[in-house]
Amino acid sequence: MSLAELLAAPGVTEVCELRSSLGFMAYHGGELEKVTDIVASEAAARCGASYYGVLQQEDPLVHLPSIQYDPDESEHLQSFLDHVDVVITIHGYGRKHLKRSLLLGGRNRELAEHVAGHLRLALMGYEVIDDLDAIPTKLAGQHAHNPVNRPRNAGVQIELPPYVRWHLDAMHWSDFGEGGRAPQVQALIDALVDAAASWQKLAAS
Image (cartoon, rainbow, N blue to C red; front, side, top):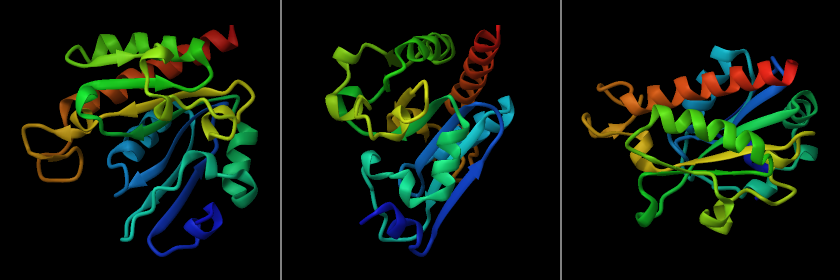
C-alpha cells in the first residue's frame, strides 16, 4: 500500500497544523500505535509547535513503514516538512527486553541528547536510551527517507514502549478508558513541552 492509498482508506484522518518551525509528528496514530498521536498533538499545541499526524480508527489497521511516507503523495506532509526546520516524531514499539526503555533515534543527535535529558528527569522509573549503538537498527530512524530526517535539520525519533503508554492502575491504554490519563504519560508530555520550548529558545538566541 502507498501513502496515498492509506490516506484514502476509510477511517484514516490526516492532520496538519502549522505553527513554529519545530514540529511534532505521529503518523502511526489512532488505534495503530496507541497514545502516540495524543502525546505529539498535545505537546505541539502547548508549546506552539507544528504538528502532523495520521490516525487510523478502523480495521484493517495498516503499519506503513516510515520510509514509505512519501511527501510526493501528500500535500499536507509536504507542506509540513517545508515549514519546519526540525522534528520530534513519536512512535510506539514492543520488545520484551526493552519494556521500560524509551529509544531516541533520528539523525539530529544534538536534539536527541537535549530531549533525553528532559525525559530522564521526568520519567525516573524508565530507561531513556539515546546511544545509537544501543538501539536496534530497525528502531533507530536513520534512513534518509524516514520523515524524521527530511526537514532541514532532521530530528529525533522517540519510540515509546507499551509500559509508558499503558495506564498501569486502570489497566487500559492511557486516555482510552475511564481511568483517564496515566501519570507517566502526563510527565512525558510535560517533559517534551519543556524540551521543545527550551530548544526553540536556544535556536533563536
